[in-house]
Amino acid sequence: MKAARIEKAYKMAVDRYGEQGVNVKAALERLRRFSISLHCWQGDDVRGFENTGSASDGGLVATGNYPGRARNAEELRRDIEQALRLVPGKHRVNLHAIYAETERRKVDRNELEYAHFERWTAWAKKIGVGVDFNPSFFAHPKAASGFTLSSPDKAVRKFWIEHGIACRRIGERIGRELGSPCVTNVWIPDGWKDVPVDRKGPRERLEQSLDEIFAREANPRHNLDSVESKLFGIGTESYVVGSHEFYMGYAMRNGKLLCLDTGHFHPTESVADKIASLLVFLNGILLHVSRGIRWDSDHVVVLSDEIRSLAEEITRGGYDERVRIGLDYFDASINRIAAWVIGMRAMLKALLAALLDPVAELRRLEERGDLTGRLALLEEAKNMPISAVWDYWCLENDVPVGMEWLAEVRNYEKKVLSKRG
Image (cartoon, rainbow, N blue to C red):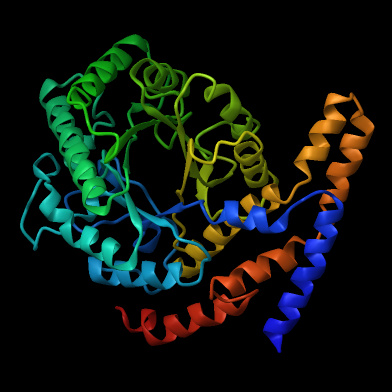
């Protein structure tokens, strides 16, 4: 009975969108091709499995103490599977190097090999998802100074360069095994709390370190390199070595993906507005979608105006294949699986909304200089029945409709998460 109501509402929505010249079936077919990379670190509060460092060693801190954190790789994989079952479409999983499985043996980060991620790859192949990868330049004694690839200490730089090289090899092997390119993304926390005298030196050292990491050509069928900037961080309020301008130049010169983390810019900046400008010069970009609130960038993604703007730029520009989308936040104050599901569904809803906009008519009005008609239609489009289309797409993908997914999460919490220490 409920399915019949959803299908009836969907048919009515198809007719209404058709009146605006929008082909709903074509929009859903295009949406089906988007894969969101689900970040594993939400599931265990960015702790990983190595226990070599702490927040005082340049680590990342998740706030909150909600029960049920994953304590090992098996629990984390099980939680990710549960989250993916509640999200329509086929997606990816994003790993950090700190999630290596070393059989409790001490393996430092510059010694990591593909074998330490073989179980992750076998699992991904089994459930049919792609995998992306990240070197972990934080939460380690050799990150305690606040500098890694730009450190003035040659030995520290050498260690982190070796880590970056090892991670590229791992990413390339993962991509080859899964038959889908692995995006290996480099982000470092390097910077100063107070105003530095020398802004040039650290950036020259970072450039040299990156050149060494990327010296060996990787097969783009298996691995795509990405570099990620940040405006500021806790403890690096005055100066971050890997700024947006630095990495933008580096990516353009060296043919890398440029990662735009939506929480790594000033609150008044439009990250969406950067997409079309960058893709004039770059082959592709990576989005790490987060929700910034004041100085904190790692809140759960919701269907905000900013997220909708991102989706609109991607779809209106036809950048479906050139923009790769991943999520990046960590919230330990709520159920972690719910945090994944809310963020994933929000990003997909934003893409669906953008795909259902009457873009052809909006462009026609704009080209004619009818700015009144353009604004009026943009406002009218907000009243269209996207929820009927979303519910139908969930039904078609055999995932819970509406708030039904939350009941499954709470049942999983009762049966699984509550039994963890």
